[in-house]
Length: 256
Image 1: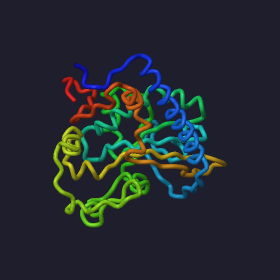
Image 2: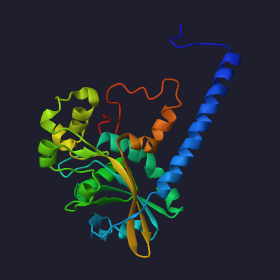
Image 3: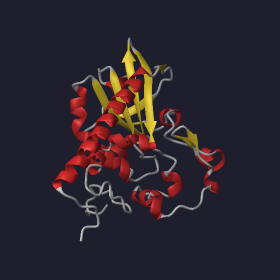
């Protein structure tokens, strides 16, 4: 017997039409939020951030690649990682294919991580990606945009992430594989404390009259909309069906 409510086609249609009204309202709200994002004040970037790219040393303005808008995915890949974060890898699998389409809308999408460029290049080849990926190793960029943190911050002050300050690490109960952090840390080749000093996020920038401005940043659940697979899973009969760690990467041995 089915474990879910069943009904006639007429009952389904009535319920579907009711849901359609809610979906339309959500779409209108989403349009309104997009407008509010675009209305945020821009903040001028005066610091001279430097990055290492496939083309050599680059400034933040150089990452625009001649376009007026830059979308940055803050990919969790710290200097001590041996592989990229599995969750960030799943997101990158989704956006790798449409980078070229964004470029046709005057938008460059680039990932930025603190790992040295050679590590990023090797992992990029392993995953078969083609999007731009810059290393901010030795730069304040990740720290200034609240996606990388020091051991002292983590241990004594508490990390301030997603606009909320967390408790210091010592005050947080030991984590298990249930929340994924320990497992993801192992999959990234590091320990949980080191792994969680990097965080995911997305920031947007505008280049106007030679000046770079910061326009928007989002973190944590604010990234849900960037997961292309989530948009499909949210329409599946059982939703996201997240039980345990289920992200898979392009490992040579076929394991996650």
